[in-house]
Image (cartoon, rainbow, N blue to C red; front, side):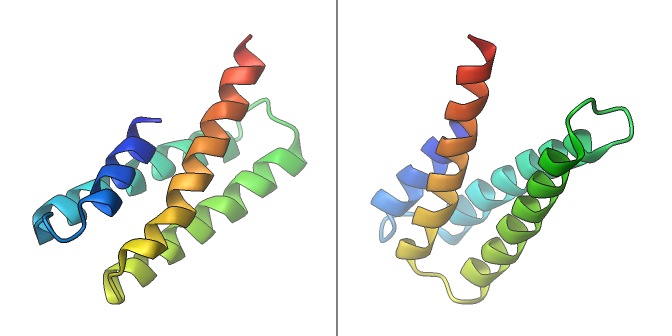
Length: 97
């Protein structure tokens, strides 16, 4: 949720945000997804293989979409990353309950 909140803030304050702030929010999200994808798909992970595959594919999509934002920075593109992060966080939160 923290990554989604940071991206949402950048999206909401796009014109006022510096390049460094935008880059930092995207870098934080990339780090989060690197950790998530790496741990979820590791041999030690007890997740079912189909979930590992789905998370790996989603991670690749997130990385590619992040690069697309960096190449052509427009705030509307952040909505996809925000939505993915929020949905994953909600799913994890629901499983923890």
